[in-house]
Image (cartoon, rainbow, N blue to C red; front, side, top):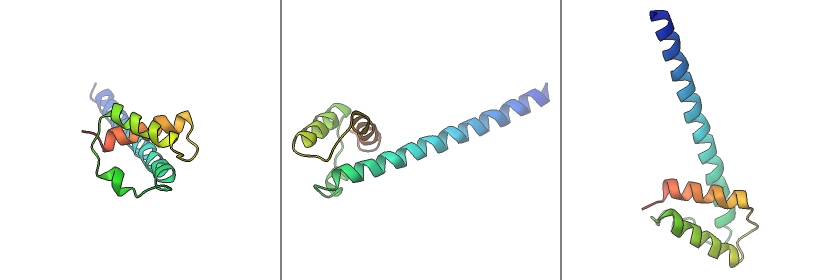
Length: 90
């Protein structure tokens, strides 16, 4: 019984570490995407100073896209919103 618990504990620890690393990798990719899409028009400091709700970030990104933001795919839009909502929310 102790052997099963030990194996299960090791498995859960490895799974948790792997998931954390995957989330960190996704965050890094989304941060790069944010820099690529937004910094061509303005400083990222403008973004970093904001603390907005997800719906407000959605409005702003759509507005920026309408005003000439570099090509923005639906996937880019979703990933930028996820990143902003996670790191720069209210």
